[in-house]
Image 1 (cartoon, rainbow, N blue to C red):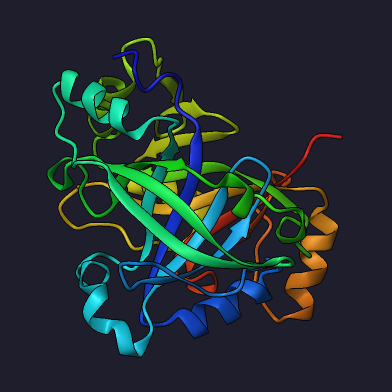
Image 2 (cartoon, rainbow, N blue to C red):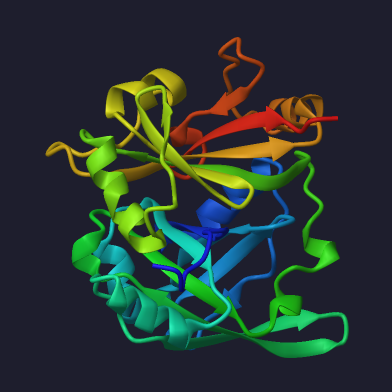
Length: 284
């Protein structure tokens, strides 16, 4: 399949359901800058942490819009969405179908964004893989029609020094089997790299990793995995300009962390809205 080209991570989605206030407060304790709360045309609401190549979205709903958040209520809390970039949603939809995979028709989505010059409308088009293809989460593509309303300088400076998401971790009892969907999606040229406990492929600056639950728990601590061996999105890795700045923020805000001895800092899922976080130092 050539139409999707080489994958690049666009953003990740953390499902916080009706707990946007609590989640955003905890996320800021971790040292992340958040955008002002946005409200989608479909009734959900969000906050973003924007990085250089990608971003993270806290997605939920406000009490008066609980009826619009049924999809989120029915989905697992925590790391819910793996989202790749596309520049042509319509063509991508055709290419996915040609690869023998089911996809949903492209959807339009918009939300108002307040910037220094006033309120403008951020617009997107998304293409979701068929829900039956991805257990316990969602994989889709996002075409940004107004990228200048997402990647803004004023939102890209974080007290913890984070510059980009560099890893998306999926647990599975059969990592290679779970990863085969993405080989079919992106084509056989997307070579899977063997890693400790599983396999991975590169998606821009980020590496999508498929590892066993035991490997994940040894690396990240206790996690919400599945009982039937199916896949579950559980953790992220992030690159920071300064581990010292990160530690200072976590200590100041009374957030627990561990240092496994490999030069990284890990915040357990219980302290990071249900998603384990591993921070690495940016090369100098």
